[in-house]
Amino acid sequence: MSYIIEIENLSKDYEVGFWKKKKVRALDDLTLNVEAGQIFGFLGGNGAGKTTTIKILMSLMFPTTGTARILGSDISDFKMHSRIGYCPENPYFYDYLKARELMNYFGELFGFDAAKRNRKTEELLTKVGLDEKDWNKQLRKFSKGMLQRVGLAQSLINEPEIVFLDEPMSGLDPIGRREIRELIAELREQGTTVFMSTHILSDIEALCDNVAILRGGKLAATGNLHELLTDSGEKQSFEITIKGGAAENLKDSIAGIAGAIFAAKPNGANINVLDENDIEKVLHATREAGGSLVSVQPVRQSLEEFFVKQTE
Amino acid sequence: MANPNAVSGASTFKIISTIARNTFREAVRDRVLYNLVIFVLLITASAIFLGELTAGHEARTIVNLGLGAMLVFGAFISIFVGVSLVSKEIERRTIYAIFSKPIGRGEFIVGKYLGLCLTLLVNVLVMGIGVSLAILAVGGGSLALTIWGAIALLYLELAILTAVAILFSSFSSPALSALLTFFVFIIGNFTQSLKDFALTIGSSSGKLFFDVLYIILPNLSFYSFRTNAAHGELPSAALLGGAFLYAMVYIGILLTVTILIFKRRNFK
Image (cartoon, rainbow over all chains, first blue to last red; front, side, top):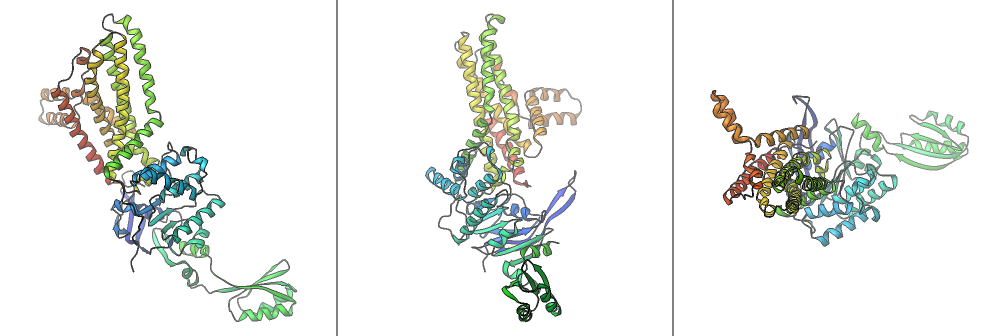
């Protein structure tokens, strides 16, 4: 299988202290492959090594050891950057430029003619939801959320095959987050690979096909998100929601079911059981107590629970 | 996985000129050219008041004062804008988005350097015109034209100084870079004294030290033609050609070293 991003045994040490003699390992022997056409989530707590990895991939930093390839080219080959896009975390741009001028500038660096630069600028600033009246404002007057939108727009100006997004939802309000989530999903539909680092786990759950979790610079887990959450060795449980009936009677009736958890709520209850065969026992007890079934659903481990376990 | 819309990127020349134009735009929007207003006021005031103080030598005094002020104003821009040219990009993290585009670090350095040279060129041209007009106002006649030889040399000196500032800023803090560049500017204008001093020293190691300094530091005294210009002299073609060649070689070496250092830098 060919991969669009190949990372092999990548490590990075930072030299710290006045004499720079002490070394701190920020990234430790990371090996990771990403297939084309997916949204890949790159997770980890603060200081886990996510931004360091992305900076190495962008050739902003050099690895201490290891290699990486993007689109088959070594990361030191900056000409390959004509096929990729990057939106840094908390993006900073020339604040003396207007949004339109910045896009125009980046378009020029890709060698676009004036007509193409204008077309791409208008198309992308519209796509990221930047109000047209702000296009001719200097970036020094922009809020964090507006800068984030410009950052995303500039990362797409060359119609990249892969786009690296470092905390793309940072600084956005809930509506902005939803719009950017839709934009990222749209990119995948167009065949663009998205490599995204974020702290916002709900965005990962909503968007990503595969994920990698870093802990202390090391790879803690990687794979298909659904498989990681269901095959994590955790026993699956079932949540039964009932309404009506005498809750206290019901509580006594299910007391004999091993591992069952009863939680009363107004005009009903939630009951968790570990064994699928116990569902029928609970339903029987519910009917006897005069209650009725609302729903039965398997409880999957949440990404948050999985993430906490991997990073603890 | 070939993308039919894939872009091949701009040529090196196009990238350098785009970065240079943007650097010039930055200088304009950051009001670097505002110094011209002060300069024009200074020259106008000189033209009005000098007549009474230097009877019969107004034009010559304006040449001396004007070219001196041009050097001070220009050196100020070369040093302070020069040292922040690259460090500001790193500090403000604007460099992240730049280097994610197909741009080499060498192209970036050369583009930034040429952008500041363009800013200095506009400065020197406007200031030069101001001095010429002031000379004409006090009846200096042909001096208004002959000073342009000295102005050309002065511009080359500023171009060298800018390259020195960029080199220092590639490995040290802006404050230290400014200080070091200022020292180079001062010592560079007295390099002949270094050579003479080396001759008077008895110890061979001391002589070697000052000889090395003389060779390494730019010979900026080569570019000082103010006194001659005040007497209506024009630099010879040989002087201009030699000064130009020396500046190109010196700047080429400095930028090469800067690029080699910059290519090894990690942007944390």
